[in-house]
Image 1: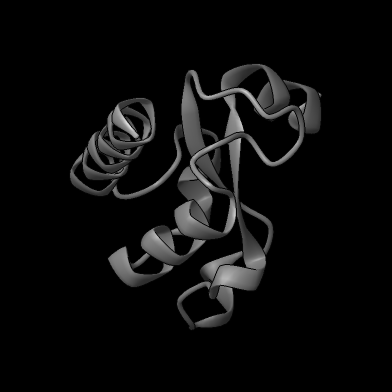
Image 2: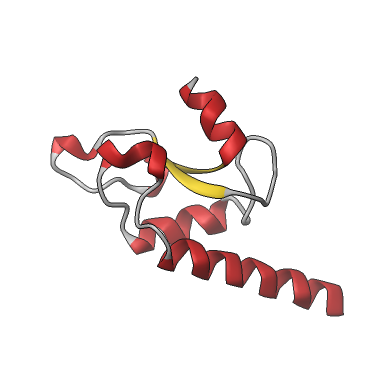
Length: 91
């Protein structure tokens, strides 16, 4: 039970850092602002892990659809990736 609580607390702290950190992923600067409710939904959907490899380190948001169409991205167009998988996706 203690390990579960520690893991849950670690996930909460990571979510807080992602929520309060940069409002958008560095690799998606052209995508525009990702609203907090979308970041929270994506983090929960991904269970605090990279959606490609499962890593919990170096996480950031990757926006698949450009916000240049005049609307904020929804959770379906944002994914949580680690630095390594983000660079592979952009490569």
